[in-house]
Length: 105
Image (cartoon, rainbow, N blue to C red; front, side):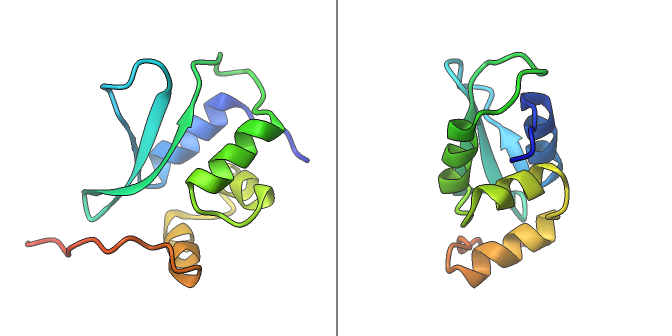
């Protein structure tokens, strides 16, 4: 399994529709937003150093929280092989895409 760092995971989450919850202090919680609205999909990371490697347990936890089917999909998400749009398609294909009202604009 390829190695990814906490820095890479944080960057990928923030680039692909997730926003960090500033209220959380024990762990860093990232929530998926669609159309600028929060969804129930989230993941969290501990306060590890940016350069620390994500372990198998962290990747497995992210897989479940992000509603992905494999650890490889998490690694692909972090490596930017899965775009934000593709991630939403995966969620929809698996019946996990949250219903979010359209923008009023």
